[in-house]
Amino acid sequence: MKILITGALGQLGSELAPALRSAYGETAVVLSDIRSDVNRALVESGPFFAIDCRDAAALAAVVSRERITRIYHLAALLSATGEARPQEAWDININGLTSVLEVAREYSCSVFTPSSIAAFGPTAPKDHTPQDTIQRPTSIYGITKVAGELLCDYYYKRYNVDTRGVRYPGIISSVTAPGGGTTDYAVHIYYAAVRDHRYECFLKGDSCMDMIYMPDAIQAAIDLMEADPSQLRHRNAFNITSMSFTPEDQAAYIRKYIPDFEISYNIDPVRQALANSWPNVLEDYAARVEWGWTPRYDLDATTADMLSRIAAREPTTVAPADC
Ligand code: SER
Image 1: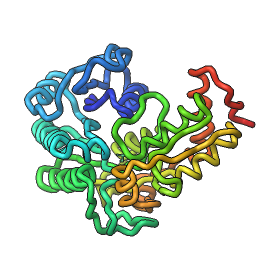
Image 2: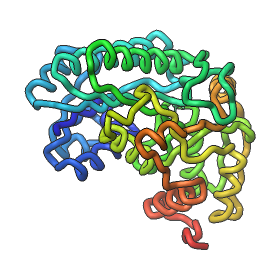
Image 3: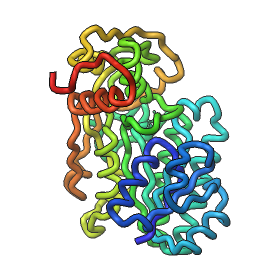
Image 4: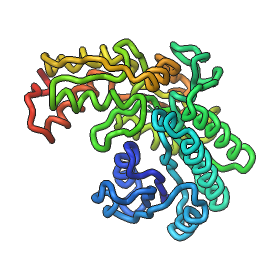
């Protein structure tokens, strides 16, 4: 097994890379990203290539030279950035994926591509959103995610490229901050809670969305790619979720550890519209049955772990996680 990660310096890649190295061996994982000026420790931790994923020739050169057999294609623009720069979002998200799939076809690689809760729109059922239901997203990010799911399925059916993916909820993590997403508030809130005991949220307090903590997001990416293909009735992409909550719910859990924590609201209409158009709670039965998806972290466990990790890095007054 030899793995290439695109977008490796982003929120998911920066934690997936070490996890894949401990699963498959230190020399089994090659990193790439359009940037090389962030996270120098990760850049210097092993083979790294500064590649724009839209450049199929550059990708092919690395895949061929490094004898890559699996690609985790994480490079993408997220939802809020996409609304600010829709043409660029289409270009990066669709042409980047197309070049990855073409290289995978030529060099017989399997491909993991994240989809998102944003692949659903306002006409999908909001609660217990089924695996197979109407997908009419209204954001450019969501449109690229639906097109990407279909393109990945097409490459599987037409060219037998082993494509698989999950529809990630908002990912909560403490190593690399997310950038340009609507669910980013659910990460920022923990940093602000530790530092200032207050947070100004850009979404309304009752905006409900699915979320997942990074260890579960990583486990999903590894387990799905290791799953027995004969058990997969779906491929691109599986609903998964660990928890579903509002900013108000999250603030209440934070108060268990920081009793004087305060949340206030200053609504960003663009991100509020995105949140309103996405599901409240996904139904993830297909992932559970077809490849054994079982999340470990709920909101309480996530909150305790996030606050203690951030507090360990910043001088703080947070009470210990077992209070
Ligand atoms: N986390 C993403 C975003 O907010 C949704 O998949 O854009």
